[in-house]
Image 1 (cartoon, rainbow, N blue to C red):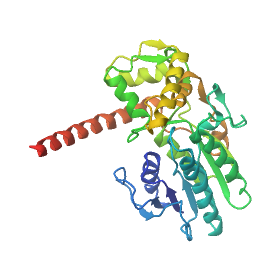
Image 2 (image 1 turned 120 degrees about the horizontal axis):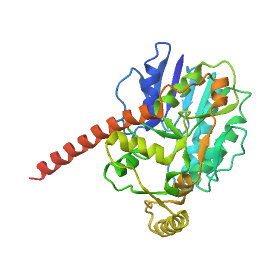
Image 3 (image 1 turned 90 degrees about the horizontal axis):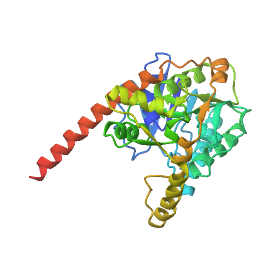
Image 4 (image 1 turned 30 degrees about the horizontal axis):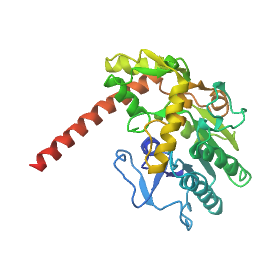
Length: 338
């Protein structure tokens, strides 16, 4: 099976490229921009194709059996038009190219953010889409509806991973591990008693394998996680235990945090600077965020390969190596100054 993976240089895309390329039955090509940072790409046998999904594609999907579309803007704050262009227009662009060139299957990466942050407990795929009021969340819900309009033209499967974490993730898990490691993360909204839904990156890669191999369940969306949703304090406790540190001990009231986040958002928009705290961040962790993966198990045959504890241990091993590498680079730069 010849597979094209978009966003191949990203956190998720790079893991997916490596994991799929280890399968003898797959021939993998990663799609990247001409200007893409390829530092995450190592290991595995695959080809790279350079193009921008914002431009005319000129049959870029020709000859492929399946396209896995992971490319997206994960920016939670900033230019709304840019986010929609990347997350909606580009996705439809490559979907149409896939249909025109006879691609059999299109696997699209969405997110559980489409359900919103008003409180989720074992939420399944029948729940209404009610995304939080940011361009990122809204774009994920919009593009799902647009993609499914083409279900009669191509086999479509939508994957909705929850809180993805793993090695090389510098946006979500790195700040959390660093905060626990340095003892800075001592407080947490509602004392960390709300539910979170961890999704180890190698589990979502396995779910993608199942989406590529399944013979049923097309035109559907599927929640994907580690299958072990837990309270934030338990998740942070695992991180602290592996690091040999103390987990956050105290709770924080949500309303003052939201007030601060909204104030920072309004102020920083005037200067074009991303605030260190956004309403999206607070609402996400201050409300239950738990999802059922029963449908994926039943129709795709998905069963998480890695438990959350195992995923965290592998991620922290990367974190330690990453920190050491950065320190070495800093020392080399300092020596060069003299």
